[in-house]
Length: 286
Image (cartoon, rainbow, N blue to C red; front, side, top):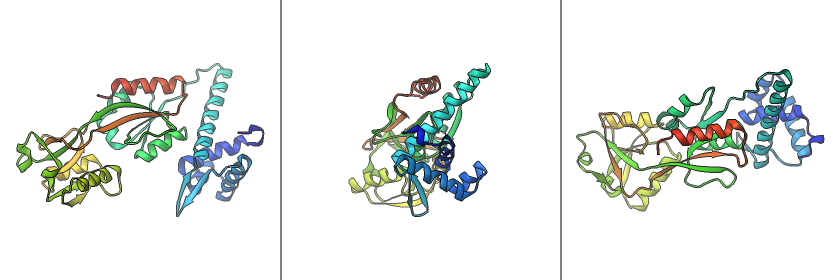
């Protein structure tokens, strides 16, 4: 990156755009016009000789180079802030940032949140969690990863079995364990398509030649559990999910365990990132 050709103002503006991936919202945060922001981002891309985002329909997605530029811009801002704090004789305190999905926060990361003072939290699905780490918005992310990203460092935190949850009077509640074939003909409570849990479950049921139907689609583990408790249908959830007393859980023996990983940018050695990663590894139940 040729810094003599790169405006620090453009870098700061691009970091805000990268957070929103929307010119209207980013321009409003920066208190500039949308055309002005668009021009800044265009000039930055031209000076670097690389496209920084692509448009798919109405969605803007950062390129790999765009993720790198956003991360560099945030790191530069943090270094400048630290330098100014040192110059003024004040302690440069940067709050660590953790990104994860709803399920991870509900069932895995509570002790981490309690243990790390000043921790900032970002909530998003797997794609948003990885994007937050890649662009420097988050120091550490926690997500279920079936395929490990080549550009990030990953640390396996835990593997949890996949379990079936049903009311105590359901026929499968009497079994110690169940197999996919035991679900033949069931109407299941499932996440909306095309989420990763739904895709993996459908693939497994299809491979096992198990016929099934959708009882209801529900977003998030709490709603899946609620519908299962109401008797709408069985649900398949990750083994880390705490089930209420009105439900019985049974391990599904022929479904693979679910691997939760912590992810961070390679080479990150600053104390905020290192301490947060250490806290995640120490407090996530294995």
